[in-house]
Length: 278
Image (cartoon, rainbow, N blue to C red):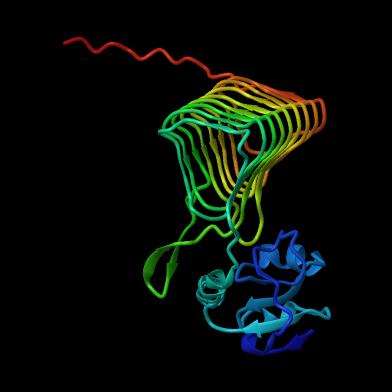
């Protein structure tokens, strides 16, 4: 591994976390548990780290040493986000868009036969494929909950990825879909149905023909396979993987990966509260 100056890295394509799928990425590590993950990821070309753990790096990746890796990473990321090229909107004349719906003036693609109902907000970096339906009061494409303390100041981290919605997807009323972050995209594949009042966080990939019941919360960086059922109010922690044809029961809190065809249920034990009188 060779020690370098971050400013001299000419091959940076992305600033990302250690599990990134984007080639040419720079990440940071200040916790030893992520060292193996970053070193084994071929998409990582350089690592920002601390003097205390730099001795553990014994591969060909380049590294940058600083006392505060996260500060350097996020300051660089914020500057890097300013360099993205915008593209003109592409709104199909065959799409049906309610007059109360609004969409950004750039970086929006809406294909043929898409239906956009009342009071919908479509922000930048959103692509909606042919035949999809977005029901009333949804927000598609927004900065999700990624907040960091940088140089002792609380800052919202920009979401520079896209929301990519496949063909014949239905997103029901009052749901929110976050933009991707760290160069990744939030992806909902063909013929999936997202129920009312759901939150799909940044960098999630949801497979084809999934059924996500109302009130579900899917944290960031979750990968869901094809034909998955999620029951009413289920919650998925970040970085979870859910296999094809899995079944997540009503109200479940998913804290581990779920295999193909596996069924998980959350059973809440009722506790009788004693009465102490008046």
